Length: 182
Image (tube, rainbow, N blue to C red; front, side):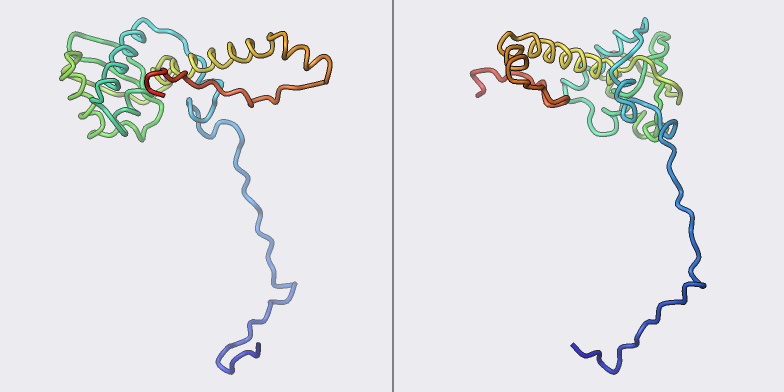
């Protein structure tokens, strides 16, 4: 193909004119903390006195489909810090979830379910949230499944006699389907 007369030829600058630009490296730790950035932190939680109450309330709202999208995420990621009659105080790590409209929709869903008429949300460190409880339960089920497989006599025989190995992360725990729904 021949260049058309209207095309201008770009010249590369001489090597002396090239300026080195340093590459900015992202820090590996401390960038974002929370359940989504640290799987180990998500799978652990420290039970709090209000945690079981909040977990049951959120589970009820989710099952009733009373909350969805960001409201559901706010409920799952937050910790119930205090209850004073009809006023509940929540704490969430992500400031982006602490929006006025999201808080109001969660408050309305809680009020409709008979839990709280007033709701406050602060941003801070969360140690007991429904999401952390769910992740801890899923992690426990995964460990139990891995133990069952590795302790199976047939699997142990295959590992011993043929050098078989279980690839880490290859065992996935999924809920069993009912025979009626299959």
